[in-house]
Image (cartoon, rainbow, N blue to C red; front, side):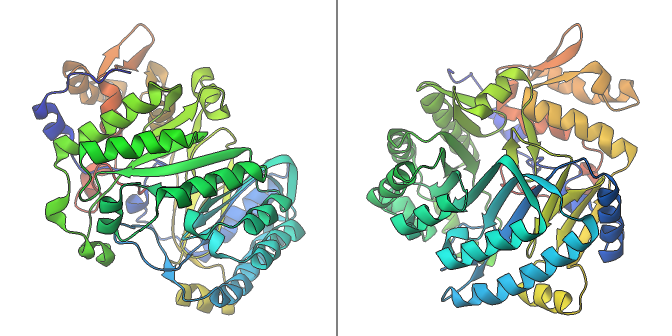
Length: 452
């Protein structure tokens, strides 16, 4: 897809704080009282909907060390021993939830982090057994995990495959040594290549990689080499996230030299380069910032109009409910969003008291549900049918008109369509429909953050 002619003025005007909309309302908008009692009620309602399958997300917070750029909720662990205690607590949470909802059918399981493959094979086996004792994984249920390629061994991948994991996403970020030094993540290309090859050799059906643009010292020439090297790995899917520099919220980012960060215009052009490289090599541009081979399920879903988006990102296997387990894990149950406490000490203490480890949540109103449908339609299918416009419809049209004037969307007979120019500002279009955003601008992450 050739890069559109985008004026610097347009880039500046639309480079405003905003979410990635893996949920609506987004986490900063969850202001009402919501704790263990409210989550328990949601689980009771889920128990009554016996025929509805669920997805499961498990947060594994441990990393060997903290990378400078990272904005994830992680705990630095000197050894894998600390994971045993965490799994003890995790088993308590699983028991509490399963005791209410029963042995639910599960359509997909995802391990995120942190670094899930920091767990030993024995610990991964224990975790899988903990899940299978309490839930029923459907035939063909997708099992996936995020992984650090520096920790991969053949034995580890063989063990994961025997446990049923079939899709793995490697955190690559950048393959240039100068950029890697600037972000505190030294990860030579041969190490990444070996991890990808081992995943294929051991039978993983999907091998994905994550890249980040807008990192310190990341020039056009260096990023072009990273893109070419990433393309040579022939990943099935690629996520290309924009780095959000928020040292006031993430102290580890203070180790980054802010003067080495690309300008907003350079950052924009780095992403344009990624789109050109991947779409020019047989990948489809999916939604906001993903790419997939044209024969991949994600591409087929995008072309067929059944692509979905939830807390785990773009997916083809969305379910009505997502159960989140582990510290800081986010879930969606019976029309509520819920998030666990973010620190291991809290998580251990609350579960030790026999209580659900909930920190906050949100019960969706009818207006929330209406706006959510509209925003997710934009984020997944790049259009907005008029019946999905939040009421009052005339107000929505007024809010969208400046985007029409700037050529980002165009009104048709039955819907607004995102234009080729508007595709680069997809989040800004969605932000127009966000009823909470004007109240939380000061709290929002920068526009291209990986946060929800």
